[in-house]
Image 1 (cartoon, rainbow, N blue to C red):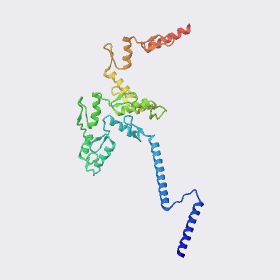
Image 2: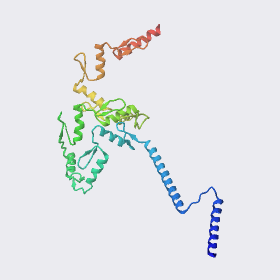
Image 3: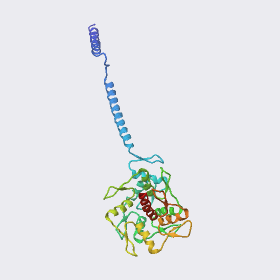
Length: 320
């Protein structure tokens, strides 16, 4: 009886304690040890999810600065990689192994192939000391020293040391122009020509003159312009010693000595050494009056005739 009474009292005390605890904070549910562990795990999951979302946001920010291919949508962080990728659409293989000459259209395939050459470079060039892992790589390199050009053009007598160079050259004969401007549809034989052309649309002028504020889309044009500041005339006529800033001016001048007249009239048998002389001559056949007097609107074929007329025209207007 005593034991049963004690058990009853203990049970009542425990029940009273639990009711008191629950009344002290009625809004907060009780949490046992397992619930606490579950709650901690859930917090860790939430933190990981937040970290993942932050990483995705960073990736989205990065992708806004990527260079995308307009043909397939593939994106690249570097514009140079995009330019290389564009060649693959034209069937080109721009990644060429320097060891064996094998070419690849994909950069990852090229890198994977390069690992096959990570052995010792046992094949050394006796002329310059450069070494190669394969005998084929050495043989191809030695063509630089020997001048050997085994790849011959099917249309002319030119030959090349590399097959890729031959392939590009033969486009001159076939008229193949695999590189197309996405802005205007103009086609080009070389990817470098397309790159130069695109600057017309973007107005990009990366080459700045060292002496003034002028900028140019082509390096050659920039160099030619800079010679006007330095008066550098490095193109010298071998016949008379006259020097020129531009090589095309030298070529035109040399026609005086050779008698070459490549510009032929479409209406008669006359030919001229300069295209400007041909245009002026053809005005005789077409009746085109190229030079117009602003005060009286009278037209002339030759500039000197216009200048002589304008002197008289101005003086007569002044007298009247």
